[in-house]
Image (cartoon, rainbow, N blue to C red):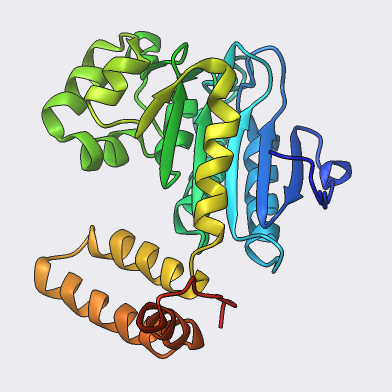
Amino acid sequence: MTTTNKTVQDLTAKYEFLLCEIENKVAIVTIHRPPVNPLNTAVFKELTQLMTELENREDVQVIVLTGSGEKAFVAGADIREMLELEAVDMLEMNQTSRKAFSTIENLAKPVIAAINGLALGGGLELALACDLRIASEKAKFAFPEINLGIIPGGGGTQRLQRIVGQGIAKELLYFGEMITAEQALQWHIVNRVVPAENLLSEACEWAKKLAEKPSVALRMLKLAVNSGSNVDLESGLTIEMTCFGNAFATEDRKEGMQAFVEKRKPNFTGR
């Protein structure tokens, strides 16, 4: 991101494992548990809390989520923590992770995953909960849980098949093998692959473009797509119609149409 007219809100004092700064209506959230940023109960809770806070901030329109360092986005859940848990405790951790991923998925604002390295297990589940995914050419992806005698528990079996279809999903889930960024692109797991040195700037460029869009219409788009994907077609069309009506009722709709007629750039205000 550029430093011109930079207004940064540093939220890191509140969190042990997350870094966050805000500039030009874009929040960059970095998971910081070097060297490979594994997810544990504390990280899940912090993600839920921070994402909820960003949801309620008027100076944030789009969120970019990434991992610290060059080695990993998130290299899975913290196996050391899991190894010490009994089944009932694991269920509690699973519920905590589910809350974090669902919070991100259902956030009214777009979330872009900037996948800078390994996205394994829970890390891939985290990326799948985001709206868009941009990967470094060095990134690698896998659901290796089968090799540990378990299965994904953070939505991997459900979100993956909705993106790539059952055949490819089962291949990744059953074999637990690593795939490259290019393979992830071919299978539509990620939207774009870029050189490692350009990853964050590309993600922020996308975020900047989205931050300039009419925020209510963008929120209605996300709601229509997410909610419609889990119902039958007729119900989905009803959801779309309701969201369309909400967007049409805004001042931004009037401004957008007027600007189109007058052949000028619209000035959206989020109202």
